[in-house]
Amino acid sequence: MTIKEVLHNRWFKFGIWAALYLAWVIWLGNYWWLLGLLVIFDIFITKKVRWAFWRPKDKKKKNVLLEWVDAIIFALVVATFLRIFFIEAYVIPSSSMERTLLTGDYLFVSKLAYGPKIPETPVSMPLVHNVMPVTGGKSYSEIVKWPYRRLAGFSDVERGDIVVFAFPNGDTVLTALPGADYHEVARINGRKYAEEVYGPILTRPRDKKDNYVKRCVAVAGDTLLIKDGKVIVNGIPEKFREGVQNTYRVVTNGLPINAKILEGMNMNLSEVLYDPTMPGYPALPLNDEEVEKIGRMGNVESISRNIDRYSEVMPDAMLRIFPYSENHKWTRDNYGPVWIPEKGAEIELTKENLPLYSRAITAYEGNSLEVKDDGIYINGVLSDRYTFKQDYYFMMGDNRHNSADSRYWGFVPEDHVIGKPVIIWFSTDKGKPFPSSIRWNRLFKLV
Image (cartoon, rainbow, N blue to C red):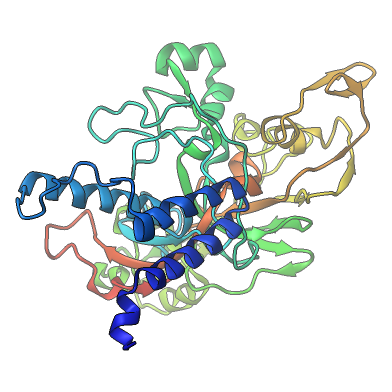
């Protein structure tokens, strides 16, 4: 038998597809799917069932419409399978990761990096996340719900990783302000006002929350401290990263810095505001190396880092910075120390540290919690200790002064982690006309 005959042999084809399918079932860990081997056996061997029922029986009679239907169905099945288990497209909507990732970068996110999650809300429009493109309505139904389960991946989330995850506070959405943090709006304005003015509210399951992308600066079990804008984890300062930037007060002699120089630094010019009354820039985003470069310019007279320190004149600071407690008078630049919850770790609960961990205990781990005069009650039982059921992470944007991240809404649970960006396949600057808007130097750039 020749090689060509072997490749066209129905038993050989069945063996290849059956082996691939069996490997997928083992990875999936649900052996009910082994019944699918009967379908593969019929497709290649017995051919008793007409699976492509929409195709004409007489293959000589071509129907262009049915051929298109056939191609679309096949494409949707393959694309959905790849999106669930392997890779998903994502676009950077904001400047929180600039200049590591720019607004308008289109990414491929690897699901294999940390292991793909089995869909928890499987009844959903293919290739659509949570909102229908035209109508704006829900793209999914909660008629069927599956428990959280993650398949094996290549690694765990590590310090320094750029991670795509479901926005923890995205469980409740204001219809008139879908991009806002409902919990923050309710804290500042009152729940009744928020819902009456910006409501009604929508609730979303875990796998249908909006997706965010940030850098993981601390993993489960770490102790994080931010001192004057410097991130310190377990007593070790964060290593230099080119994309990490803070804002600086830059005073000039009355002449602004050449815009071409700033644009050459991949700076988001929409965030660069020159104030002629200073004269200078009250909040110029720079990394450590650029501070020295800008400081050497002839028209720059002084440069100083903007650092937020807690002050009693900031009445809403405790409403914006997690954990929103009088016992934690923190700012975005002076934060912590805070211990990141770890699976299996037991902590002593006090009324002082409860604000840090109450949302993890309730919203993410499904317990009821009540504080009474005689102590803390979890699921109706007086408790002075708690053991966490999963790992958590502390995420921050590289654009440290323009990022809504864990400093504002707390820890990211492991079951919210989606994947890891691997490549920028396209990038466009929304502020420029096409085709000059295309950032050619970023196409197919590894993340």
